[in-house]
Image (cartoon, rainbow, N blue to C red; front, side, top):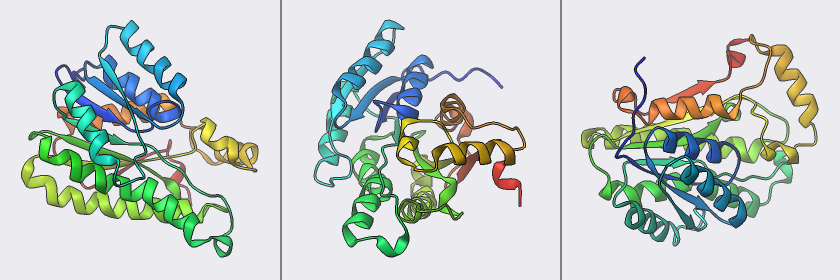
Length: 252
């Protein structure tokens, strides 16, 4: 496979101050893209990501805002476009969710989870697509939980299933514009997001035992898949959810 070269491309990554978003932003910048780092609360962490990108010779901008609030998304997109001089790539990565049995959900629990994990993709597409050229890329972060039962994961699972449905729909609708829309469903990745799982260590051990590779997925491996889907090499891939899990989901 030829090296991925994103020189001249401009990318917006949401939830870019930590975890997968941080690694994706750094990887896109290393491939030559200018990157707008969206974050909400972790200003110092976002500044550290920006400093790392700039120290390596990359170009980036910081865009603070809540992508789960529909009225903020147009402003977030506008700031990214103004800072970078345009937009070619959008990575909808920011996520949230409540962990509890489904019968304990409140309408607010489900609403907030859906707004951040699923509806934000639609609002980002509305705000960004009019400014994206042919060859544009939109990518969302899903989860194996969209199609599998994980204890106390029901609200997040529902949001990720909705997200994947939106990816299929947007992929078809934006294909005539030459813009692709895809999702990555990663296996278990050791990020600080899992610190809130009461059975975190058990999940890690069960995943290692079940995985054909005997290990977890790393943030770098998710970033590698993101880089591929955001590159010119993936022009014929759209409306798809690509699984990155070392074959975990292939085991019955």
